Length: 213
Image (cartoon, rainbow, N blue to C red; front, side):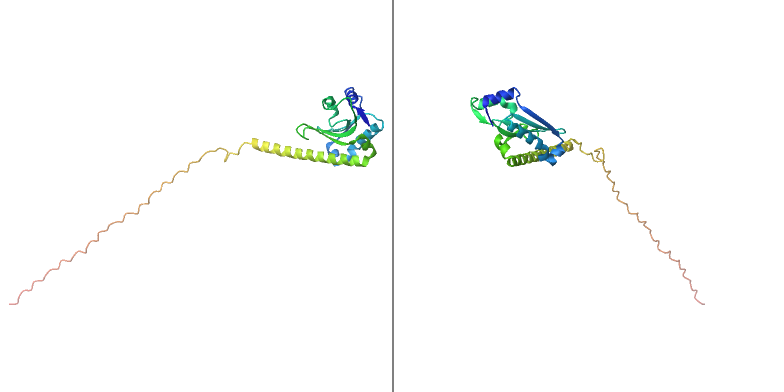
């Protein structure tokens, strides 16, 4: 399957593209992406068989994420087809390839990732190989989204913790002065000086002896 580059650009500009749209919940997409994307892959193969340009889109109903399978002549989303003329010779013919696109702010700085899966003919004729490529690609994108969500949760938690006011010790930071205890020197009781009186001496009378006549 191939297109002249100018013809491809004109077809996209005029929306001469067949579209398929599906929705799913994020949990279902994470749990079994192959099953969720299977209708998109089947639609693209039908359009390749019909030689019709096509785009299939999956939108997650509970998250700002979309996953697309789309045809192009270069590794650019269909929405940027006008840019092709600045890169390629619009008079040339180029093969149509199938690209996987994921669009969400969490995937990278630009919010979009696009990768080639296979040429349209190979995507049809070697379906098992092409589906494995899509499987590997989708798991890688889901892993990136989960990591981004975990990092965002941690950042939010740190920000919330930083906003919490510092706990005041004992509600008010009042410094209670400890009253200095007066250390009063305990006076030793004054010793009573007792002057011991010397016992009074008995006055002894000397008895005079009269000489005998």
